[in-house]
Image (cartoon, rainbow, N blue to C red):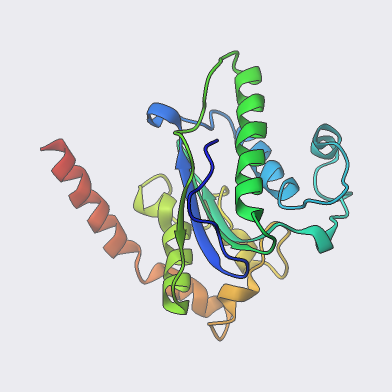
Length: 215
């Protein structure tokens, strides 16, 4: 994966995203989504940890993460059939670059082995956009969580299982740090309302975009 010209800054939030090469699907079965979730949970930690193959067998429950060597903090995510979105905060120097390189290499190796293919799976280097304000932060979380609804992949937030939305509605999530976003709202119910208020508007924009492409 090519190096980035502009280094990421510790303590800052970033929107990271990438898609399959030639817009191909990068998740073909539920097991693939699960695999990437395990992969991004595992590789956010830098310190000594079990081999990934052993970790993947035992899943999350028996893994005690070395929190003092955390590269990044995952705030929210959404995995779609041919692309993914992460909202993260960098904690260590070069944390995002290391995390994304390991994530890409590990998942590509898994996918290519499983489906007997060769070559790059993802479309070049990941894209990274720095979050400039609190307002942008909370709206970005909404954009990420609404992705499957706006794209008409799912009819409602509850029925789509490959995003961090469910972690935001639980008492405590395993994969994400939800306090940064939920801290802006009086309750989880208020955050849910914040998300749902934009569903119809987002779907309308998506329909218009598709109409223009078709023309």
